[in-house]
Length: 294
Image (tube, helix red, strand yellow):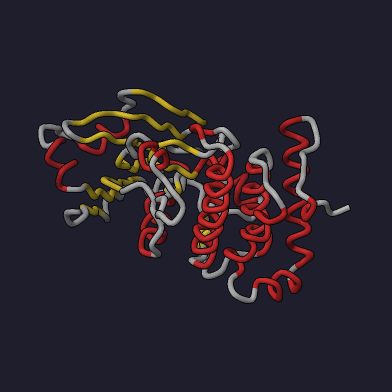
């Protein structure tokens, strides 16, 4: 990226950093920052002060996540809960940078900007390179994309291990996701159709706008991430062997010792996942034997 533009000492602090290709595509725009704040192309999601839209800009295909001022009410509400309010897209680009340096695959940040002096009135955006021709794992189960029999079992085993590795790396970086569901893992459609055991299958982790960053992730946030992940995977057709595979990859070589030392935490993770499933589906999940806590 070019050297970022930063202004201070005025009524509005501003930061702007664009990839050269993106900057060239917008060279005719008088106010580049304002260009990103105006919805364009196809809107995918709009929640309160946040909006995500998809747009083609020259040869670039991008997703823009725009944040407008959330107001003091939202800020104070989060402070009252002893939580840092999400007032800017900065969360996403800083989280993406940390995870990328750790070797994880995340959407490439092509542009980022932030302006505003006070937390309730910050305006910001992050422009992400679109991940072309990708499938998320939301509907991952037997028969997905034609995977059946032994090939299905081998794919499931691979993905369980890979998701565990990604989650472990993220948590060891001091980052918790806060929306860690399997639909936030993407895989290229063409690559997965040609996949065979022994081959790498690149997974991308997306939707980083609510991540939290610390030196170490507190136990309660580990629990929330892992419970959400398990809840979203309970209809995949998990076996006890799949659960052990996840634990081995997530906890490392001394996984049995780690597990027994923190068995209470893992019990809470499973129980919370079951509660989430009951609340969302209005019925109990079918659990592998290893997860039946009662």
